[in-house]
Amino acid sequence: MTDDGARHEVWLVRHGETEWSRNGRHTSTTDLPLTADGERVAAGICDRLDDDDFSLVLTSPRLRARETARLAGHPEAEVDADLAEWDYGDLEGETSDAIRETYQGWTIWEGPVPGGESAADVSARLDRVVARCRSAGGRVLVFGHGHSLRALTARWLALPVTDGRHFRLDTATVSVLGYERDTPVVLRWNS
Picture 1 (cartoon, rainbow, N blue to C red):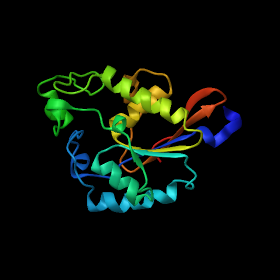
Picture 2: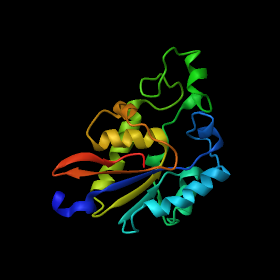
Picture 3: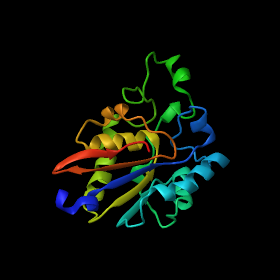
Picture 4: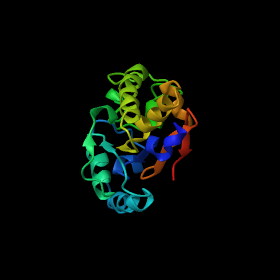
């Protein structure tokens, strides 16, 4: 696969800041707009995308990801429901500290997630995204969310989705997945 170089790269863009991401509240299905600062930073992402030579551009269906794609110069991004953020269920809108008052030591990676998605559910849908990226025939650009893009990275590397916990991902950042010879790797992270 290295003979094809950049043709097999997947560029990941986490959406710009929202009020809830700024305040550490878990956001999956709540459709929040970007803050003014989130819009400003998202508009600057186009300068970090190298060029526009992407054979496929995908986005989560959530407003914050779609708006980031538009502001970053990719209004044509195709909505893919499999890129939605991990569904936090009954924990939607809560901070980790508040959740830990009920579930000691809680993380999304180990649950529980009452009324939401299990790690197996998230893995199944992100495996479909990985397969789609690998069959795209060129570089792919993906706009999404913190936990789902971290989980996608784990699946790209053939790791359990829960190993996404090892990849901190800030808002409005660009990361790149690819290959070293035939081995899936992280080429650039959180830039």
